[in-house]
Length: 168
Image 1: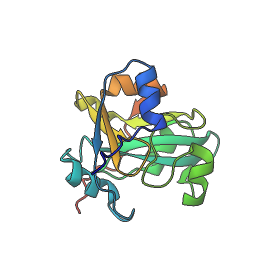
Image 2: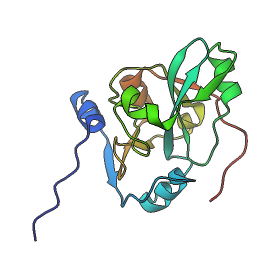
Image 3: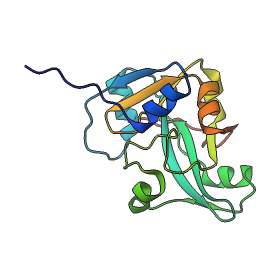
Image 4: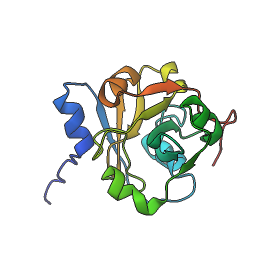
């Protein structure tokens, strides 16, 4: 039986090119849907507090922004807008994802996008030595330090989540 080829994504190439240490976690990708991040957390064995989902929003003044929050949390759009000096922000439509980021739903990584957008990562990431983010395709997560993620994305760490944990 032929060996399965290791997955290599643009996000992984970007991290390697920067000389940053990371671990790749491959998992069986199901259909993207409700609580997808929580399901990935279960499959990888990475706590949902350390497994971060990537969302793309549009601010009234700031335009397109990338946000990463723990899978166990919900994004607070009002808090996020206020943190960046916008009056309001909204999620972009899923149809816009590929054109804006180069990634499809369920595989959006804050690393290696087509264009570098302002990136905000929940300050909860700073509670951990390493967090997981999408590796750029459904089926791959990358584990790296929040500071290395900051080096790669020029992100800011902010309080952007609703103050309650989600469950499956």
